[in-house]
Length: 90
Image 1 (tube, helix red, strand yellow):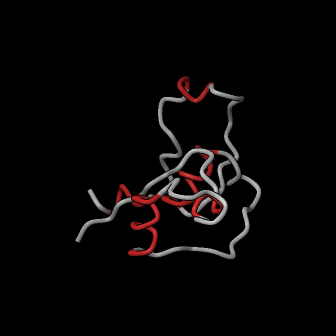
Image 2: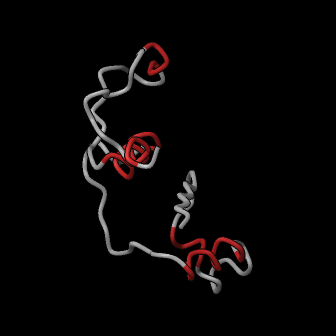
C-alpha cells in the first residue's frame, strides 16, 4: 500500500475545469479521479499558507509558528511533542 501526497503550490480546483482550462492538467486530473478528493472544505486559521497546510494535513494541527516569515531554519526541532504521519509510518 502506498500513500502519496501531492502538494500543488497555487494550484486551485478551477484548473481542473476542462471547459475553462482545456487540457491544462490531464495527468493530475486523472490522478484526482482515481483517488480521494476532499471537496467542500474550508481552511481554518493556521492552515492557509503552504507549510501550514502541509503541517495540518500530516499532523492534524494548525501551524501557529513561534517564528516570523521564513525564519523556520533557526528552529532546531519542529514541534517535537506532536506525532505526525511520518512518525507513524517510519
